[in-house]
Image 1 (cartoon, rainbow, N blue to C red):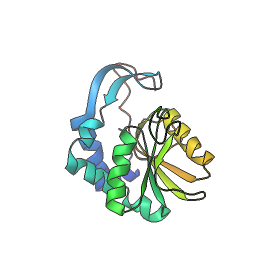
Image 2 (image 1 turned 90 degrees about the vertical axis):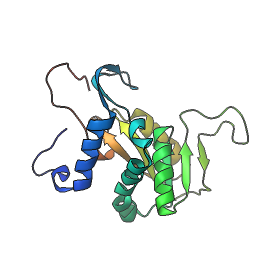
Image 3 (image 1 turned 60 degrees about the vertical axis):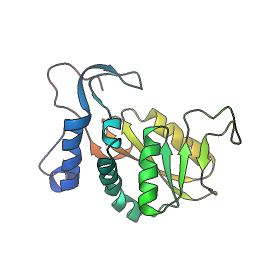
Length: 183
């Protein structure tokens, strides 16, 4: 974890709490293949965080200043972890939610559509939430899908592993040394 003396993490107790809870509950060491194809010597199992309602609620509250500053019309969530976050933030703020799928459903009333929920209209502001990003490939594809619908999108993640051009609550990396982290 980067923890420079002047970083926001050193100044904000809630982000220090998030760092600690990740280390205690969600971090595993080993040799892992990440979704973007990179290998890493650690993995963050965010579902160990999201499965605890108290932790999920506290993480959702960390987005309150972002929601206040941005004043979005919709909270968006990416499949799967982002949907959990978006649901919690939507419930907390009473802002409607949309879901962005990785692939369109092949059945039902909304077959062949990537985006569900809403309703939504062109030019609405969307706060698109993601759980953990490394390269940001999936969340940036979701952003592009929303922008094709003429929505104005700001992407935010809980955790950034350092390579994605995405805002996040916390930039997480382990100190170098021991097994190499390729990202």
